[in-house]
Image (cartoon, rainbow, N blue to C red):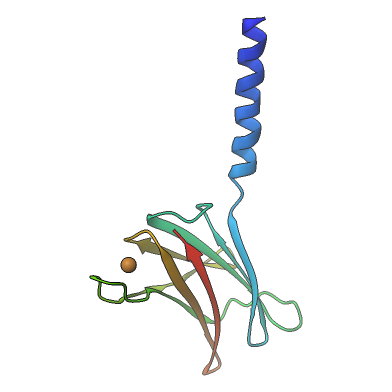
Length: 129
Ligand SMILES: [Cu+2]
């Protein structure tokens, strides 16, 4: 009986582990683009978080010829100056990837800037760390 409970518990652990492993996902428009931003930590955590940014144009075609940058910032708090960082995204397997390093717990504002043909479109969201 004890063995059965242990098996059951470890099985539950595995199942919840799988449910937890799903990326944090933001699905939004940036200008005419449909953008899906996935973060490999869910919820996003202090330290390094890897972002994958999938971009589609109005026709539903993957965009791979853009320049993508991620700006991330924390608004000023008492005793802390405003923090602003940027990360350039690289194209990998048809998607853009960037790593952000969150140095502090709290609310962070993320802006994804997509530049193509001299025009920049932005997408904004915030995360709680
Ligand atoms: Cu802060």
